[in-house]
Image 1 (cartoon, rainbow, N blue to C red):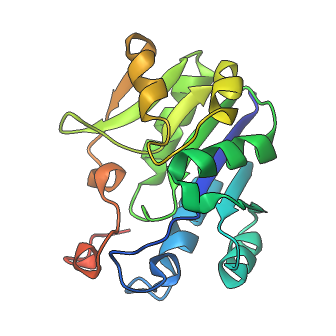
Image 2 (spheres, rainbow, N blue to C red):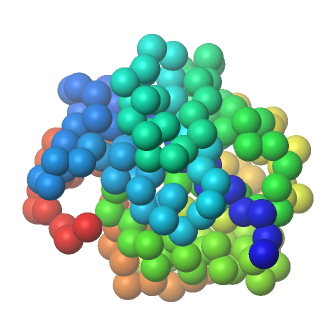
Length: 193
């Protein structure tokens, strides 16, 4: 069994939401980030979650879900910085599943499909819903050094673009892979979790 680590990015600023969206409860009472963590943790033995400085309550909630939590001191620099922090905390592995803390509707089957593609030797893998690339994005361990060098707010977009010919596209019938929560309006209409 390959050592594939989940990297949960939960260090964003949530400016458009108007409050701490990651701790905002979904209709069944579980917070957005905790739901995202539960789905990732259900398919992976090890999940490293990244939070921003001062998000102690969120960090505690994610630890309670079995995640290893690391605080990214330069989280304000953007998603690339958070992803580099997560990779550094995870250390070298056979592969990584990069998931976002504001995407609580991703189905376990989609996570499992990306994990399986990595385990079968894919360099990069991502779920696609109606031709749109979603999350989580799988990356082989050979990208570790590149992950550590990420900066800014693009996350891994440039890395994916540079290696697009190595990306395994996994068609899924799961709208959750492209549904993130940016504003309160994104919470309605409620989807089945």
